[in-house]
Image (cartoon, rainbow, N blue to C red):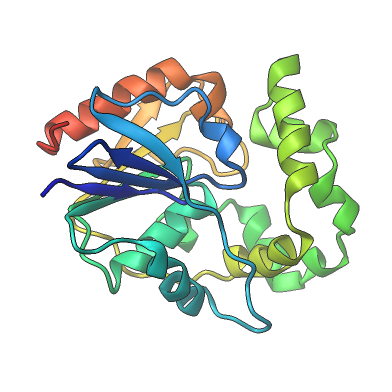
Length: 235
């Protein structure tokens, strides 16, 4: 049988043989320009609404119920999706894991994330900020062109407020010490919200921002193909 590739929110399915699952950080439209090697078809796996008080690991277990483990599979996660992919690696056995614009542990979070966690200031941020684009969110996420900003507005307006309220503190307080063995990370060197930190597992996209999966899609697609080829995951 083939390989299944999961990412946080979107799912790429291999025609007849291989499955490629992927979850985006916020909305499946972030992957509108994603192109994989011949033989892979994109499907979408949406976030679930979290239960009251649900932990990050418990949520990962519940979300993983959508994954067909009867075939080899690959996890792919964008932003928060990458964190969730790592959590799933703790109880699933993917062939490979690919992170895009994400982090593997708290060390990858900028100082102001840690400050927000320590002070609890995130609790007083109005919901409006999370659901309406402004110059701050556009700058943080690297949405530059009108096309980028229009997509960002759509993504933010569509976001489930229950999910956002649940996710923010869990991102800030995520305490992970596990790194999957077969993992590759794609990250933009100009990412503001999750700054680029070079290491042997990270392939950089020069001047790429947190929005690079959309506005630098050609380079990201090339790197995805390179990773799949290097991991000997054939279409």
